[in-house]
Amino acid sequence: MIYHQNKTGTSPIFTGCLKRHAGRAQPVLYRPVQTVGQQFVDLRVIGIDPVPLVLGQMSQIDQVLTPTTHDLGQFQVRRVLPAKARSMVGPFIFVDQFGPAQLDLGGGMDVRPHPHINLATVTWLFEGAIDHRDSLGTFSTIRPGQVNLMTAGRGIVHSERSPAEERRAGPKLYGMQTWLALPDGREEIDPAFEAVKNLPIVEDGRAKAIVIMGELWGERAPTTTHAHTIYAEIMLGAGGAIPLEEDADERAVMLVGGEASVDGHPLRLYELAVLQPGRDMTLESRTGARVMLLGGEAFTSERHAWWNFVSSSRERINQAKSDWRAGRFPVVPGDEKEHIPLPQGTPKTVTYP
Image 1 (tube, rainbow, N blue to C red):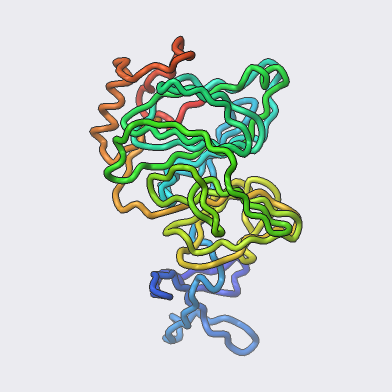
Image 2 (image 1 turned 60 degrees about the vertical axis):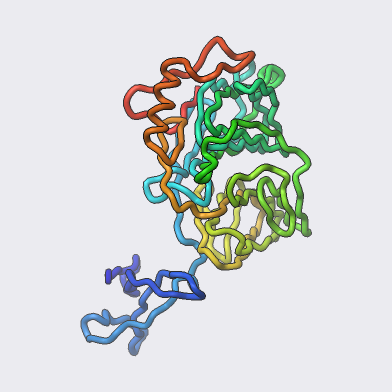
């Protein structure tokens, strides 16, 4: 058992035990008994067992992940997964938030052709547009309200660049890029691509949600899922609220604009708040907010990540390294002239231009 003193020095708290609550393991705080004059006593000193207080009674947040920010000159990328404290939330193994940004006239984003294996990438924009090309021969312009899902499976190569018309006006860039690990038995499926529009929208007064993947609030998105996945953009007006139901093994929310809280627990901009499992709760905002909800089934087998490769097998990642170095991956039609070379040494998880 660990003893902590709070910042004011008046309310010591005992932590470090675990209690079963409603069939699930819940952390427990041990709060000392108050004495006359509302002073707190270190119960270890007087030999009295502390009184248990279930953590869920104080907060619905299990864990908060702070992003690592990469400044790319005209825009910033904030990465919350993978992190040292946690590698996945459901199938989500990689979570980037970028922008908002207004790039220079004539400029733009240019992510040269690069490979992926054993994962699916999900691109979701709040503002701007991105041209996607891949080795299947796909060309798609990603715009707000449309989700682009690229399943790498046994291997795919793609590029992402600002469209010509966006460059002439000075491209806007604001959105999310996430990766989903593929489940056991499906890591080596055929590569595929889909751009899905007309996603379900749930509206109730001052709350609106777009269901991007999976089923939420009684609506199911037509987007392909390879494991149980939930993903949604939530927009709250001033005084708006929406329930966050118990519908996944693991769930998290990210505030990407405005102000919001979960059952009174304030969210901080761009942090990923992992919610306690098995509990219904409410997301609300006093002044308005944009929030991303993501999660799904908890994976029971380990996943490894190196550069743009994810797999349950280190040997498979080493094979992908060798294949990219030797030019054995397919090319991207319409974008064959350049590519991102295999990094030397320990790379960043993903490479931007």
